[in-house]
Length: 320
Image 1 (cartoon, rainbow, N blue to C red):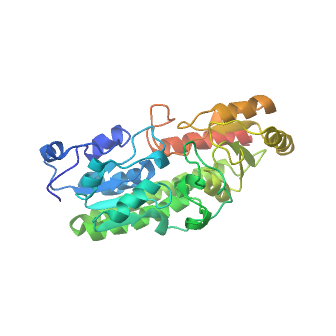
Image 2 (cartoon, rainbow, N blue to C red):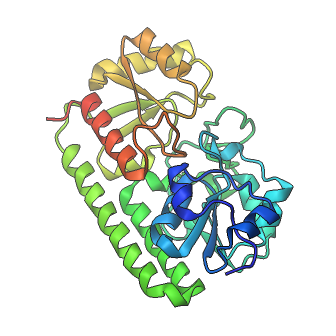
Image 3 (cartoon, helix red, strand yellow):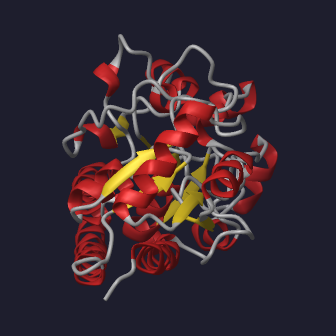
């Protein structure tokens, strides 16, 4: 739709895990995709929605590289310039402060904030921070802004479906020539997400334990949706070790609640989880918060990784 285009077309972006937005203007122009609906997404869960809903009509790129923690992202001058050429921007306000600032300053007409498309809740995790996030609470929130709301809504298939519906409507309005296809694609995606919700509900209905340990408090929505309890390892950075008091507390809880496993994730160090597991005589496994897809991910897209998460939870919780 705009004259200058992205280097990475939608299909290629999917196979690359929706890589960083790196094309220069001459490279972008050389692609010749002037008839595409150009969408810039902030990080993988947003890019996946745009890819699925936009289909063949959308040219989707992600500002966050595969393997990069989303909240660590800094927007380059080149990326800011390219943002101005996009037809739409899709992001989740409160997750990436640099993206929020860049999107606020850009002149893009269609700005879609996923946080406005569903209800965000406070899961009491505002005190923890990620490595390199000193001075900020949950995923880039300060305690003053966003009131400590948990942004990890994409890990709840029901809430993710709500966001998908809102994104679909925004695409229909922004690119009415292809509205029928966007509507059809949205309905198909929502149907798949309902199926995933059913898999989780049935798969976690009868388990020996309802408590799971993580070193990253990302799974509050998922736990709430399926009647589980997430216990994150204090308010420390993922790379640091838990305190002795916290280890003793979790050891006692593990015995009381039948906890077998400490989960870590693919994009941060597993040191904390393995330290606790060793001291508490527990196993470790991956529970992926799906902030990005890499070659270490247990699947090539959102649905495959979520199914892997379900299997990991079933094993850890003793599904019957």
